Image 1: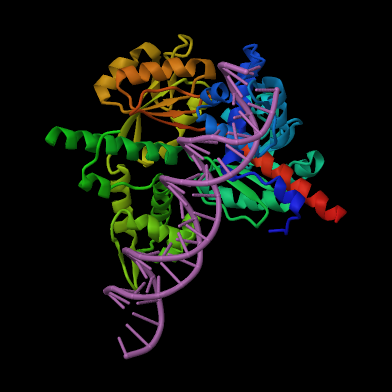
Image 2 (image 1 turned 90 degrees about the vertical axis):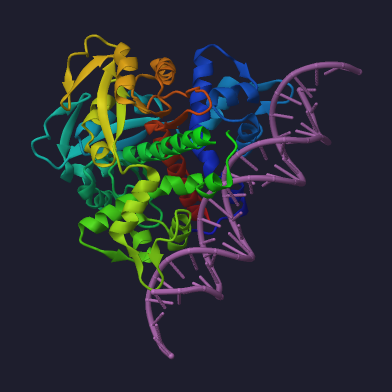
Length: 225
Length: 225
DNA sequence: TAGATTGTTAATCGATTAACAATC
DNA sequence: TAGATTGTTAATCGATTAACAATC
């Protein structure tokens, strides 16, 4: 909650837009790999799964990177978005909790190719430390502070069981981590200035179940009507 | 886009509220397991990580399940929310793509305990079929239609590499699945009436990276100021 | 009755969309 | 110049929040 100078405010991008920038980035990468050098907002929006007015509005927060009558230069726009997100260089990341999900995350190639480098895998269970996953040694959770300091880690991933997650988050924050991606099924409490994002698989399924149930109800109504 | 009768409209719940109901459900389950029989909107909101005005507004869409001056009966409210979401009985689910992530999903105990039952694991790679994961045999992808018909599967999970995802979604939809949880890094095109939710690990990290970069910039500004 | 807490209203805030002037 | 497409404005829509009357 620091006061911002006008020049800072100018760079403020709405949260909903921030969440879509990575989607545009991915769409531009596909277009670039397919050999497309220029695209319209209409084409890019289609490939990102949004409407073109929203895409143009979103891009307008970054600056004016298109050419009227022509469209956008794919590689140029791609670079501008990557720069805005901050993934033109790699972010070191630690993953804590190397169970089934931690294994999958460690092996996930999408991190590496999209601006993230897993510098350590940590687990509190001595039975797991010493194991090698995706070419990285699993180390004791107590190594956290040393690793964060050594690599300047700002982002941590929690893939532990729910009961352990808050304690892990507390240690992460104390060690200097200020962004956490939480896969554990628990609500984390963190100090102001620390960002937490939560990915919850069963919540996603429950949202689908709600809509699925509604569809079934609507169908029944139609039949009775 | 079916026209709705007034009685249907009355049951319409805003999308943002739907997304929070599973969070309340989980908080209520914790409270119940901890032996709490009654709680205020203030206490429940704290445990779900939202503000209490929003919680009460959300619950008001379901009905009037609290008692003024007293609060909510934990188990009663828990049941009402579960019923509204549609997880008072189990939903059969198929998972397609049994790589690292598919393994983790198959082993994820949170599905089972929260209203979902994995009835089949499918993979197109013959080298993987025959394997047993979490006590379930991995079967050929071509068994999809038979399994969907046999178990009345409405919800499918895609954990394949990105290039395969659209084809898998098409087959799922043709087989009768109308809700898809997509872990693949690609935008799916589906007919109206089919719901897709997307979980994208690297997008979540990129959103954190953006805010992390902003924090660093703000700090620099402070130092120069 | 006094204190507590819900359910709802109204105000505010933020996000989406359509439309179009600017301009290549 | 004519056609295409951006960047921006203004209108609409939906979500959040504060405040409080209703009521246990």
